[in-house]
Length: 171
Image 1: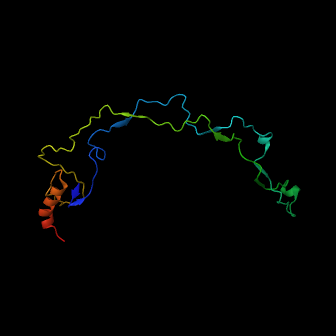
Image 2: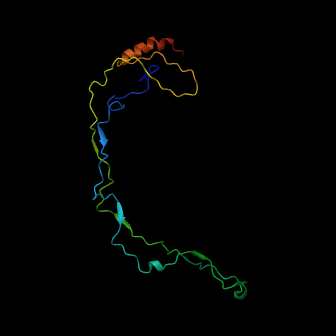
Image 3: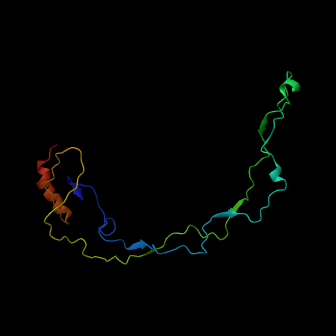
């Protein structure tokens, strides 16, 4: 596709433009098999929670926190050291994850031949045209389109562009 005698788009009419329906489509009726396991990791079934794991407190008294000398239990109440996170606390126990021996990969919908696809070996042959429609969205009026040529011969297109647009262009 040449605009102002410069290539703007190019490609195969068969593969790069949506002229024909695609040769292959996703099989929308396909369903993941019931025995398909797409979990890459699973919980280790042999993992055992360590004894006493649930009795480890989340916080412990700060061993560096000392009772102030001016603290009076009768006036101030029983002194309690501030609490800090327990380094031995590991959160709620969870089984470790291991590689799933039955992992088959992520399931993907298979591709099938498109029943609506019909090859057209004469796709490049132009039928006679009477009209051209151009849809342009713009905020300023005043665009003009002229010297529109549709053909299948790049050399002829360049020759016509040089004789018409090229002869009149500024700069």
